[in-house]
Length: 196
Image (cartoon, rainbow, N blue to C red; front, side, top):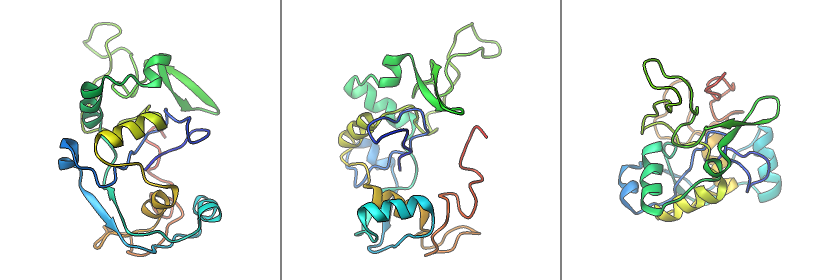
């Protein structure tokens, strides 16, 4: 699952939900996968229609991680590979605030940057829990993580299928198996923006 900013090669500030497909290294042992059925058609939402127009509808069966890549998982990748993200090199990631705005110090290891933490020394990074989603990661960095984890990023069609069409055997209320929703969060966008 990927949130895009500009073209496919240029996203980094939007909360990234890296979906590792069929991963086979350490980090894969803690990833839990959904197996999604072939032909899960999606339709209705503008995003779905745009992807279907370009790539067609229907998709072969595939596995996708149930949750986003976490800060802890990405930290192990960085420690193993020495990766320095574009956001780190640029001094911070970007967020959309009536246009893309660079946020100083906002990187995957400190999603909300450096600011005063009560009782902490000035300039200390905000605490980030290892189970939070990794953010401020670019496309190439996400691909590198997936390769390291033994998987790959989902195609547009796979991501749209997983994001908009409920495919769990026993989804929680109010979701209904087989229904395609207008938003990845259901019938409304409520809950899709952590800063709202």
